[in-house]
Image: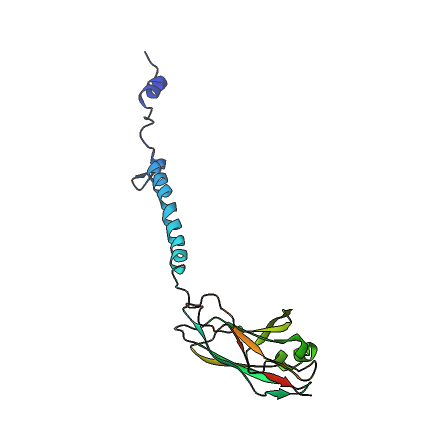
Length: 204
């Protein structure tokens, strides 16, 4: 026969399958809460990733730089030390603004005073917004590339460049220009290529 203490121990054990009051929260089993928490993580990840996906759909700008005229020289007879200039004109036909534009001018090295040319205001360009990007020699000519780094809305633009005449007299030359291709142009076949001015004669 069991004693009183042994009898209570034999009759009172709770089944491990039944949750205790401490394991229950408002009628929801602790295991149910843990399972629910595991499903909440992917929802947050999807919500964060969505803005990045939508930002990548912004279309690039559509623009086209087109040659118009030039280089038009202001003088056909010059003397050493003088500063003849040319005007070069192009346009952006859009429909969006062009992010930038580059124009390269060149002159025969023998007819140029490079140090004096670089000493001119704006390195020879007097048109606002244009700055010297690069200068180099190639094939007997001195090259000067200028850039308009700010956006150019739809419209027409003229760039003026001058150089200081050097070299021998009784020679003639041309001042050349080229509208460089800007990345993203919708048509790169109408930039005009290398264009030359009328002949310039060094008379003294």
